[in-house]
Image (cartoon, rainbow, N blue to C red; front, top):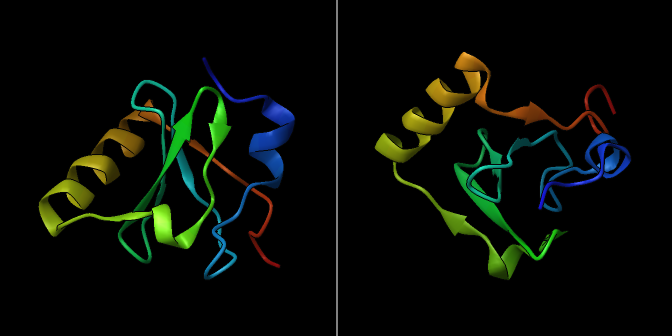
Length: 81
């Protein structure tokens, strides 16, 4: 299940309020700045800091590379906010 495009437009990291990368195939939202992922469960993003997972540099690099290759959508709510 993918997220609604309108929801993707307004999502931001609850901690730094910045944009996220949404990986529909992995059902995660990734904050590159904090090296943190947020799960998407049953089409609902779980935007709780306590539910986030910190990723190591190797996983962060993998996700960054996948996003650069077009494998993710960037949320836009907080870009410039």
